[in-house]
Amino acid sequence: MNQEIISTPITQRNLVAYLRSPIAIRERCQELFAMVLEGNSSYFTCNLDRLGKVADYVIDVMHAEYPDLHIPFHSRWRHFEAGGIERLKDFDRALAHLKPTEKAVAKLDLAILSILLDAGAGSSWVYYEESTGSSFKRSEGLAIASLHMFCQGSFSSDRHQIYCVDARKLQALGESELATGFQVSSENYLVGFSGRLKLLQKLGRVLLSKPEMFGATNPRPGNLVHYLSSKVKNNKLAAASILEALLEGFSDIWPGRLQFDGVNLGDVWSHRSIEDDGFVPFHKLSQWLTYSLLEPLQELGWEITGLDDLTGLPEYRNGGLCIDLGLIEVKRPNVLRSPHPVSSEVIVEWRALTVVMLDRIAAKIREKLDMTSQELPLVKILQGGTWLAGRKIASELRTGGIPPIQIESDGTVF
Image (cartoon, rainbow, N blue to C red):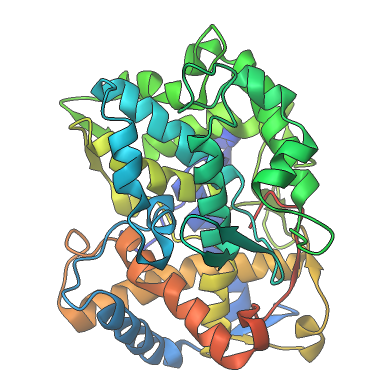
């Protein structure tokens, strides 16, 4: 991705379409980055002299995890095999009787469902996998819990078609059923549990409202495959087109978000330093979801283009890496002492700086490894990579590996 941001007057664009684009994410984050460099932030400074050190740290993590640098995409599919257990082989065998498109629909059902449940779990929740006798926390635990529930037919209203997520079942999904599947109790607290349940129930209603994207009869999120097929040209599909479809299809599921002209903007927040409308888009979960749909779509023989048009993910592992290694510096110690709402300017700035820094870290890593963006796209650097490095340094610095800045989560953002 060319790091030079070329701005077009906002009056020449449809604002909602613009805010749903990776271009907008980078432009608005760059505005806040410039503000920080000018010394006008109340919360952060940036020490770009640390960029080389951060790149070296990430490269060490990459070599330790992937010695040959054959790195897969940063996607939900990696979490399904946590603990080195090849659960996906069993999953693929279970889907072997399906036609290629039906298999892709089932895989998108799982990926979309699982990622919508992937907001931060907190430090105390644990999922125990009876079949392996292993316990998993955070993203890996959420992934494995959702995989087992999916394979048991917990999100399907048709007992003859269990590998399915459908609108009818999502709307009827009860608290006790989801709590049982995720082993949630007063002793095993999952942050934002009620928010996750409401999100799935809302998803069921949204699926019904968009038959052109998800099907007319008991629609499924995985039916997005059919919608995306219309965007394929010469067997190629742009990554940005996948993100655009996800944001168009799922924008109405997000609770309590900013709106423009009656449209729910999703993972878009406000900052007083952004001129005109003040909006700063991130679309973290939607981009994470886009990355996670790449492999099932490639299995259809589609070539995904423009991978680096998408941005790095502005979440607490990538952002924590930048703070813990001194690339982003906190001006006031009280920023680290108490949790902040997702909508607060301190969190908006932190996430914006993370997007900008991930591009710069990626460029520095490629420079040091003498690799191109085609050989090492951002989605592989995230996997190899910055996310793992953020988790590693957090575990070295703080008990429980908590991020340096605490966030008040409702279970629908991080």
